Length: 328
Image (cartoon, rainbow, N blue to C red):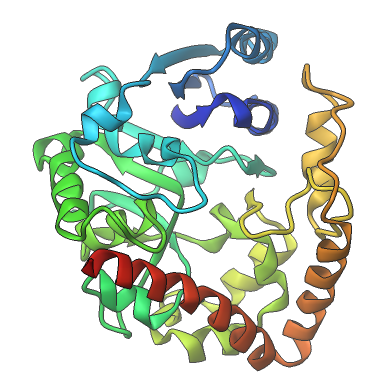
């Protein structure tokens, strides 16, 4: 199993937690080789990550891509995110030609169950497999050429047919798509992947990229918001909530922020204490916001329309700002 992460130095600790959980939950897998696409991860953090790999006798490789802006070749805007989120677009050239299939994981994930079934998932003629994200705004989909009834996918977990990726020149296709959009999109790399690979993404079970705030959304609510989500069965979402295989701490309620009440935070905390970063203090200053966010989770379960309204108001301001900037 070939697993790819992309990280800068600031996210090395979270990468360590995710990688530890990956190794721990997949000890029966004969071979796991990890490839870290790095943007200036320090020697100290690289050494700490290697300790984790050595503990489980797994191979760990660092591929430095600190010249990312030069590789992209045009001006890009990634909003509140670091440019390192775009590293995954270069997975085809960063890894050896002998690697023909990879599982990409975001650093803010924790593996909670074995991944052997995910690894063997048939992609058919598709380039990648991913989990649908039905709560995205219709305007975002429209901005990348997707109709409202077409699926939109989260890029935090990607099963990639790397051989097909290279053969079809996907890297350049994605860069060309991004350039056509002026280098400014709502979700940057995620929008690029959805727009550039439209029709070539295999739907995989939400168990393998479970967004923690989806615990509070009902199946009916998600299908009502995005009809394409009917490709996911009700039972699959129920299982994902109870027994997620990969927990993805997307959104604001992250387990390393003080005051968070994330229902799945203990999985992160459990593995953090096994890494060289054990005892790391949580980020302070957002305690009141974390309380408000958690209360909103429960409001979502009772009246999802309230969350839609608040989220849409905040999200659409961002979308409109990007649109105005691109028109200048």
